[in-house]
Length: 242
Image 1 (tube, helix red, strand yellow):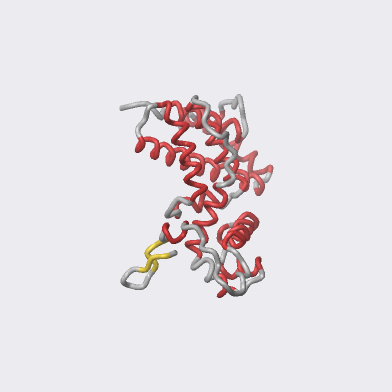
Image 2: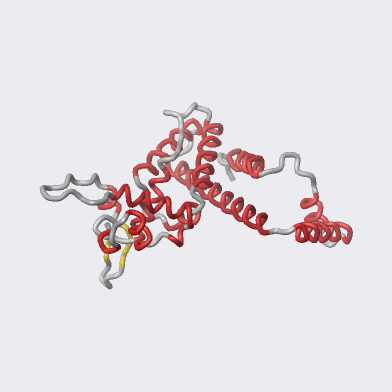
């Protein structure tokens, strides 16, 4: 499942070996574990403790296996990460086919992506390391390209928009989660100090535009409303040229 270069170092994941249908076991004792069970255990561990907690040793302990025996199913953590990403990509809850309103369909798709990333907070950080698309990811990509078809864009543009949309959602969820964590550790004294600082900046007019923007009332506060506004702005500009 991994390729090895002349130096003997890993040259990345081999997608053909990774995603090929599993062969039926020959005669003899059936496998004690499965790749699917290992992947499920790794996802549960990442959900509970973060991506850094996912080691071959920790995953083996979760399924009651020896660490070395795990390598007969998954050769390394690099491959395990590919399996984890594709596994959670199967969480998309989408209609059988797009509605024909490509903007509405992309909004729905992005909201699904956001829901998955919030259920699996490690996912945004894992996506940049992804090397290949598994079957669940390909199914999501197929839906997104079908949703974009009425916009009349070419295939390359569709792939670029899929990447742009996914990166936007991942970046926004990362920001949301960081804000929520910071808010959980913030004190009342910190918020009062922040408010005083912004008021002084507005009075001094050192940064009038920044101060005005930061102190302007938010008609629809909250992560959901903010995500919706930014998503609409991005989708509305996808077909703009020049």
